[in-house]
Image 1 (cartoon, rainbow, N blue to C red):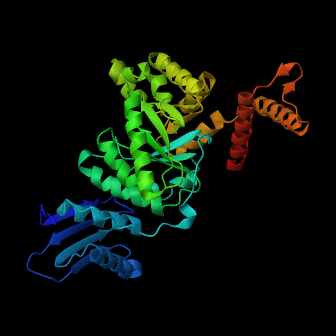
Image 2 (image 1 turned 180 degrees about the vertical axis):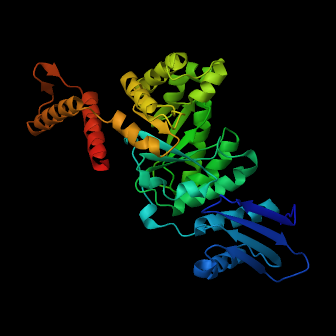
Image 3 (image 1 turned 30 degrees about the horizontal axis):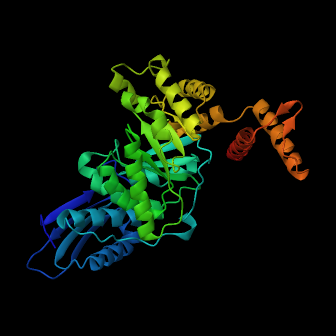
Length: 401
């Protein structure tokens, strides 16, 4: 085993740290004794359990002759295990074994390609304090981010923590998404993420179908190797002028793409303008995204609204997005979720029209009719599919009230 250093640490510690820990492992070359020094704000209640877990992981990695210091700030077992594994692998660089806590059967869920995705909440991948209660806010999807929100020196730590979160955290029915890093680093992310019940992979700064195909093929390979049966979908993020030019090529490059979305902060920077609430500078790009997605038969999802304090502005932005043809919007704070759901919820007239279409469809099926109509208007299958989505969205919105 290649040792590149005799001491390494992982985790967070500060006056504001919560639901995390800071673990330091010091490899002692002349000793076979394992020493654990634990300092925890919940030591009286869980100190023995934390030490038991540390010893279990040490045994898994055959770590004899080490001094381990743990500063705990209320971390759950999945976080403690992730921080230990990260520190250990920073000493033993070529270690490939993964210490995996048992996955809870209730957390093994699946998704569908056309699932309602009005809201997607971004969470920094390396901040467990944001993971634990995120699902209580009822976003349609939760994005565990490995890219922009993670410092380059912490990519290894975030990858392990996100892997463990997928296995251990209850997101209360939210679709589990992970935004990987730009390729080629993103390909390494997939090795850690794909086997652990992820639903959607977001591909950042996507500019060509080749990027999508590389990710798609890697996921296929990992699924086959690990006998993974659940479907894993893709959501390319267009964030540049070149990506906009190639939007339809990207959207139609794989049958596993469920949606196409845009990142306006990077896009406006790429074309050399400031992003504004009016959005004139991005109107063309957003229209291209919508048309490319619809032409490819996938969902169109709008960018995040970055002013978390301006809820009125967010609502107006969502209404505009829906009017243009977007089906959802990214969120960067839990308080944005209800606003997004309200704005993208079907209107009463949309619901009534959808009911009429579905009733006509059901009546045609009962009578074995090949033609569906309401009055003198013919109803095509895509219209029926859209009506069913509207009713599903309306039902979901009602359940959230």
